[in-house]
Length: 179
Ligand SMILES: CC(C)(COP(=O)(O)OP(=O)(O)OC[C@H]1O[C@@H](n2cnc3c(N)ncnc32)[C@H](O)[C@@H]1OP(=O)(O)O)[C@@H](O)C(=O)NCCC(=O)NCCS
Image 1: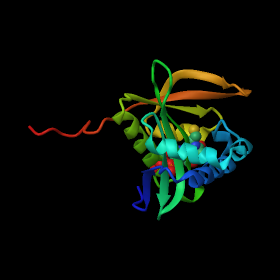
Image 2 (image 1 turned 60 degrees about the horizontal axis):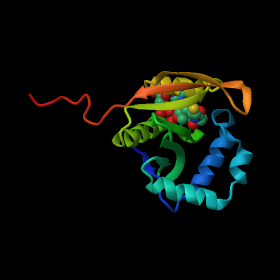
Image 3 (image 1 turned 30 degrees about the vertical axis):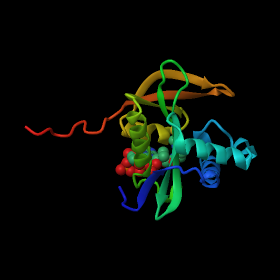
């Protein structure tokens, strides 16, 4: 991993940065996400400010931002679903094209998974569009496998999404214990 890449949880005053990253990701990779660029840009500035503020403090949903040399260059969201199973998800993963293949995506997924694990997750899920072959290969490379669901997208029934899942690596797991 490049030492110039860092990840930090979103701060309450980063609504504008959050909006810029969401817009950049939808402009660059519309095939990867549920939302369209028009939908994202039609949201009021306050909506992004509210989301940033909530994601900075919430124990059930958050975002992490990837930085390269201090500049925002990627994003991931993480949340616990509001259902009895309380499954943990990562979503909205995006790394700016200029810094791809430097392990920024891996750093984002690992940081988000760690945050979810600290709050009780034993598995982390991700929905990946079937058309997003790169996204699928990326998640498989990280150890994600079939999550048991394959469904058409509600607003575009000709497109399908696959659920992937990875058991969470807990901190200290795999570390050698003293004899
Ligand atoms: C998918 C994405 C987040 C990967 O980010 P990244 O920072 O380039 O990924 P990493 O450098 O952490 O990759 C780790 C490994 O995943 C695999 N991988 C990453 N991108 C890949 C690609 N395009 N094709 C195949 N495998 C890929 C590789 O094995 C890679 O290791 P390597 O570079 O040593 O071979 C990035 O390509 C992206 O933002 N794509 C557009 C948005 C998107 O598809 N998001 C996912 C939505 S489901």
